[in-house]
Image (cartoon, rainbow, N blue to C red; front, side):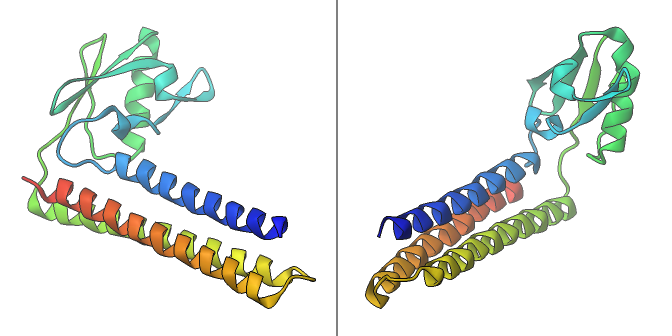
Length: 184
C-alpha cells in the first residue's frame, strides 16, 4: 500500500519538475520588456573557464528597454560581448569601456508571433513530459505484485487526476504568456 503512494508521489514530483522547467523557459522568452532573465543563461569564457554571466558581472535593468551589464573586471568586457553575440539572443551589445549596454528593441508583430510559437512549443514539450511521467507511474503501479486490482485502479485514477491538473496548468501558463507576448 505504501509503495503505491510512493509511486504516485514520485510521479507528482516529475510533473512538478516539468512545470518548473516550463516557468524557467517562459522567463527567457521576452515579452517586450527588458529583464535580467534574458541573459541569465549566457556563459562567458572567463580566463579559460566557462562561467555564468552573473558570476563575472552585475546585471541590471535601468529602464524597460535596456539591460546594463557592469563587469567586475574590466578585462571581461570583450569576452562578455562575444558570449552575448554567440548566444543568439538577438542583441547587439555596445560598451562604453565600463558597461555593456543591451538595447531591447520593441517587438514587431511578426516577432511576437514567433515568440508565441516558441512559447507554445515549450508548453507542448512540458505536456509531453507530464504525460510521460503518467505513463511511467502507470507502468510502475502494474509491476507491483500482491496488491488488489481495485487499489491499483484507485492509484491509477489518482495519477490521471494529477495528469489532468498539470496539463491544464501548462495550458494556463501558456495562455498567460501568450497574452503577455501579444500585448502591444
